[in-house]
Length: 217
Image 1 (cartoon, rainbow, N blue to C red):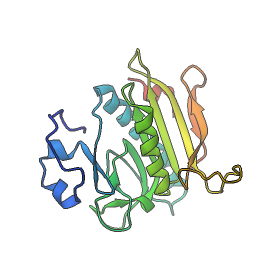
Image 2 (image 1 turned 180 degrees about the vertical axis):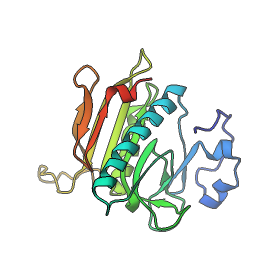
Image 3 (image 1 turned 90 degrees about the vertical axis):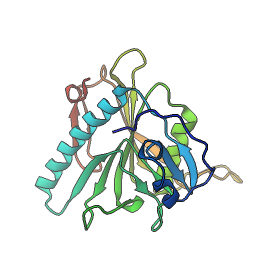
Image 4 (image 1 turned 90 degrees about the horizontal axis):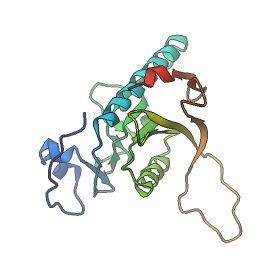
């Protein structure tokens, strides 16, 4: 659940996880650490949480269906769970709105970038394109195979569009002398809008079929 709105205190530009843990929860819950740099996370209206939970419920159903047919698979679907991007340490993490990851060996274990299969963000009208692209690039750099965006409508409590992105595993051909800004990138592989389809359907990372009625406010 998103932390309540609290006035932001003056904090150093960089912090460690241990320093973050000493802050009150209502402050720490609004912060991500990007290689130790303090990044404030925007707090959105109640629709944000509602649509996050609706997507969590739908993905959880699809994951359970996959596990019932492929017993070697074990997935967990969560919301607002920290993903620690390095193999060790905790001062570099992101907090996606919803997350699909492999089952961990023990309870209460930290989720690392290598555990994550799919991350997703629910985008409110207040989200800026720069913020969206910066976070997407960090998910890609962590090697997370799938990234989803849910864009909310501006004039209604509803979803406007859902996009699915896959991590590019090859290398694009660029003109001589041109180098990509980021070593890894997501490519859009699916796009759905309520007026264009009856459901969201894709076969990766496992068969996913979600009716729009499941995602109604």
